[in-house]
Image (tube, rainbow over all chains, first blue to last red; front, side, top):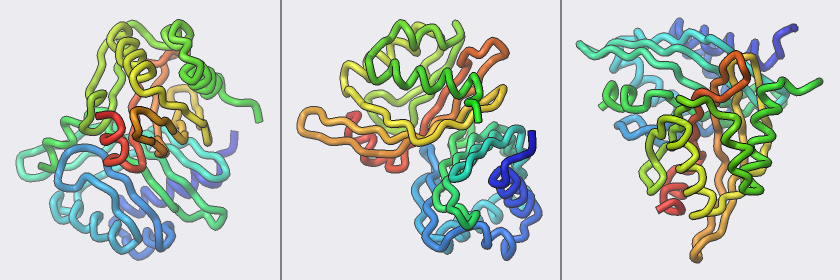
Length: 131
Length: 129
């Protein structure tokens, strides 16, 4: 079965994130996008607006030396939503992160992300990594 | 397009959730299923094993009566992602949030792990406190 266009969109966006191509990655978000990051750690919470989200990505990059990688294992999509199960790995000093993150996206008719949820299967490991 | 069998399972489990049909929900989980409930509230935590999962679900339904309105269910052979609006009124408090739920399935079409994240964690925590 051919991949849904929104699945392709998410695949491209994750590749840009991994390459650190922020200018191209920015184009995948609406200006008023909302980003929900679960857990109990310093980066948890809701980020409102593209600028706030890219500030968050900047913190992630700085804390991990730009080495955080997302390897999608399964991408699901319909005309207005996307879902990804992705393996996320990163190092921060002597801490190592290796978790599966489920990501849920709302996508508008122009193919831009309007809302996002990040769900970690091992929230304790994610909390410990960022704390 | 026909719904993926795992998406159909998730849809039926939400219907059973809304009607409080715990026996139906129970059949969808493996013996060693894990349910993760996010946040800092009376329900938060990881529930391991079908009995623990069903205890948590029963406590949730009977204690808070949340109604789930499914917005979309995305399914594949191994995974499902659900977007749903969850509403309830209890003891003068109201709940109205959108939850994203991630579910992993085994080859027999049973749920091995499920976890949620609301779009407003603070409102969610206050309601389930």
